Image (tube, rainbow, N blue to C red; front, side):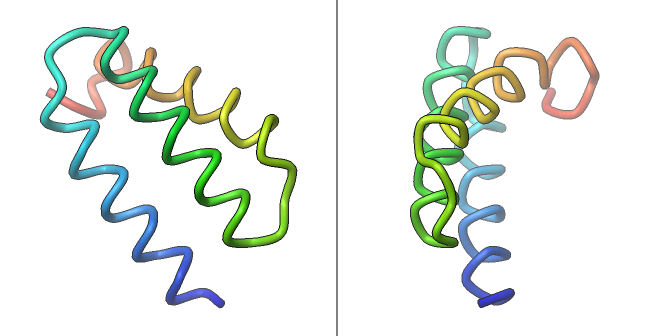
Length: 65
């Protein structure tokens, strides 16, 4: 289960790093968050919301450049 989480996290990080705008980051973050929540048996809506927020704020926090 941990390996699946790490693969999804790695792929999501790669996609977010390639985005140009905060809206693109939020969209990819929402998809990744929903997918990760689904893969781990969590709430997909909550995962998507958290992913979208993290994606939108990742450049502001200097995580993705």
